[in-house]
Image (cartoon, rainbow, N blue to C red; front, side):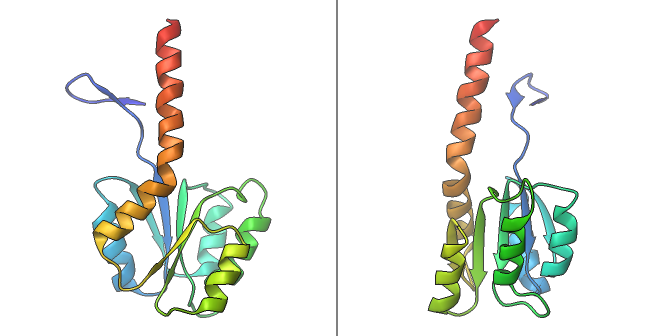
Length: 148
């Protein structure tokens, strides 16, 4: 928890990992989220898996269609990694591929977004996924404050 200039305490920003092989999509995600979240962008599933060996984000945005290791394969490996199986994932897809969406659902995604997406839709879906956790943190902070 950090203290603002006005002396008000604020919770640290949630960390989102965005994985997509298209630079313009990663730029759009960064632009849409930078005021509300800490965002790390990575351009491949292979690099994302290496990153996840060191860091645990609060949420992952993961493109389905990527070269070398697609989003489904990447998600399957994330779910098998120790301590990472519970990270919420929102899949990004450029096509309505029912089989890919169903496979992603079997692997426990929270939502999926069709590309191109609007910034407002992306933010709304992320907030819906993270909101229960944020409410839990606020309740915890309130309880801790009440004990002092």
